[in-house]
Amino acid sequence: MPKIRTNKTAAKRFKITGTGKITRRASHNNHQFLHKSAARKRRLELEPVVFQGEQKRMRRLLVLAQVKEKAPSDVPAEKAARAERQAADRAKLVALVSR
Image (cartoon, rainbow, N blue to C red; front, side, top):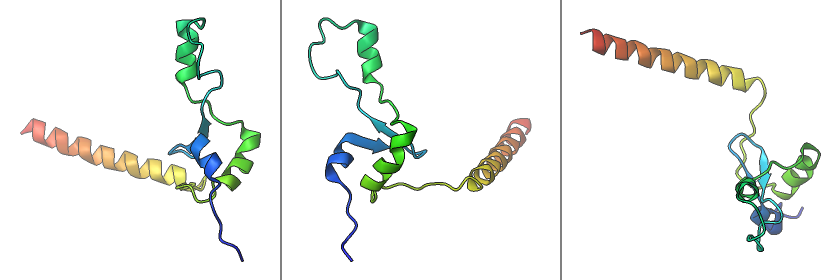
């Protein structure tokens, strides 16, 4: 069985965000900026998200990229745990202030 390897050309061109989305660099963003408006240049700075239909193919190319995909059931539990920690922190803060 051959080793699984990341496609290096894809790894250079695409980035996986913390939430698991795949972003790319905008096109028309290399040269000839003089005739482009300031608003257009600002828009080109943004990294658009790869189209949903292409993401499965991109994930296959970026197989070893550091991605921690979250199961849909884990997300509410994480939010609840974060809310509990924040409530505990607020309670500590109120206790300190009321002294």
